[in-house]
Amino acid sequence: MLRFGAIVLCGAALLVTAAWFYAREAADDAYDRILVGAALQMTENLVVNDGVLNFDLPASAFELLGLAGRDRIFYRVIDSNGATLTGYNDLNGKVSLESTHLEPQLSNGTYQGVDIRIVTTARAITDAAGSGWAYVVLAQTTEARQDLVSELTARALFLVAIMSGLALMGAAIAVRYALKPVATVGEALKRREPQDLTPLSVSVPRELSPFVTSINHFIQRLDQRVKLLQRYVADSAHQLRTPLTALSAQLSLIDETRLPQEDRRHLERMRDRAAELARFTNQLLNHAMVIHRFDSTQLTPVIVQDVARQAFRVAVPITIDPDIVVSYAADDEELVIQGDALSLREAIVNIIDNAIRHGVKARLDVRVLQLGAQAVIEVEDDGPGIAPEQWPHVTQRFVSSRTDGESSGLGFAIAAEVATALGGELGFREAGKNHGFIVFIALPLAQGIKA
Image 1 (cartoon, one colour):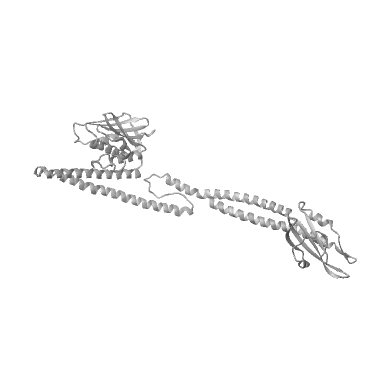
Image 2: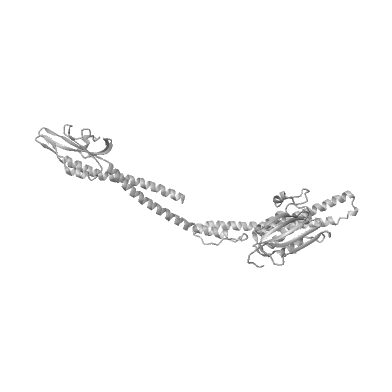
């Protein structure tokens, strides 16, 4: 519209300029005809009586010139000897007098400080003494001409402005109507679920067909890439977990009783590193799985208590120290959220696993409760917790609050990403002086939805 408006503006300027030139030509032509007619009438009144040139000023000529009421008139009559017979002696037509023998000559000039239009006419004079030429110079000021030019230009400007406005309005309507299919395509893409990689099917004009075809081609390529990525993640999970499990099994079969004390320490370090590598690999694969599920799985109603109970059973190992008191408590009323059960379970498992490995001394409590319009899963331990200044950083990938290198820094990152994707948050708080540390996930309840 800006480009079209600029074109219309330039066109309007050209039209108004052309209208001004046309108005000036029309005004000059109209008033020149009157001026020449009056001059010819004056020329007809040049007569020779008894060898003397006489001039009788015609009233009709001045009546004709009087149609332009604001203009002033100047005239001069020149006899065959070049002397002024009557009129303004210093009025000059600024043309060669000989050139007027065939036809009247028009010119522009300035007289007494005003612009004038001048016509010079000639008449052949014959008497007893011989023949010669007499001349009439008639001038008129240009105020009426300029007024007519201004009036005609103003009318043309008014018409051009109306037509330009109509053109812009028509263009705006046409552009909006022409671009409506583009908005339809954009809305269709906006309404799509992230996991929907089927070709776009919308009705568009043929001018937009290449655009939609390109989008569908891109969607097909993206679908192929996603499938390749899924296959790669699945293959990687199998190829990595299998040898790691076998390595851990082989290490567990080594008879420590036959090894020297130094070799036993090396073997224990190998077992620790293998367990750490297996745990880190599982976290990486779980992280990839969580990202993929939120990109490809539609959210469904989920009962938070059921998911938390499953995560509690998976995360708390059977071989946990019997001196550690472990408890699980949940509200009786079902708390339903809109989410993905598997991803939420992995998030809770990572929080519980992190508490068992790095926080618990003698007590671990897992609770599910409702606070306002949110379902909250709390994991509390009696460990030292995390310093408040580190809370904003421990949810980042590969950032850990521990300095001994025993944490991968992915557990809280996975939990935070799941909570954010479900419209909630991962948070921390101290349970009270000497009471422990709480990590919680707060998720919005689904209103009016039952699982």
